[in-house]
Image (cartoon, rainbow, N blue to C red; front, side, top):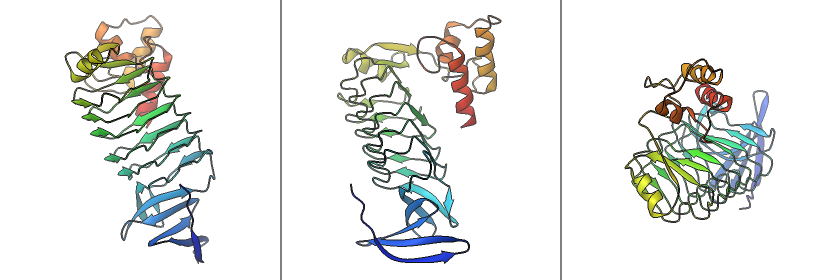
Length: 282
């Protein structure tokens, strides 16, 4: 997608400048490194970034208006950004938003994001970290198609559907944790993922799917991933429990070991404790 804008005017606002562009019926504004459009009187959709920093941080508001959306193809073909931090105000990520952002390594799906449209992260060949913070119900078509560096994904407990080619051609994908809520997975969702193991609950649809598609399956227990002390909460005590296990001070029961293996690599080590700490900070 090629974005073509026609400059109309530039006006000064306080000490900064905001430029206005127009393409067909849509009006775009440029301010503080971002191009955006207005969804209404007080909400904003991000349309583009000027590559000010490889670690892109999208603000929660611009000029007093709330950023609620990442627009269609907003960062498509952007080969500059390496990390993307989205604010909790974002409720939707548009189709192909990060498509072919080849150097993107990590991204978060914020807590209030209800919609992530088709192919939002497809062809992000450097993507390794996807931090799901939101209660998504659906993993859209081709969401992570051809993300060849992606190794592990833990889906939100609310996910009900994994659609066509969602993880297809993720050739490095080793583990996907699928929640009990999932009742529909497309037959081609994990096409050409030769190293994949599915983690899920015993007697769940995830196990049925894995068996039907000859994908290795490992059952996890009813405790939340990261709840190492099995108290029903994931907090700093769980990271400490892992550290005590590493130091041979404490032992872990089979149930605790399963949820302590946060990155699903078959071992419990300092990487798992660090992953829990990062999740808590996020």
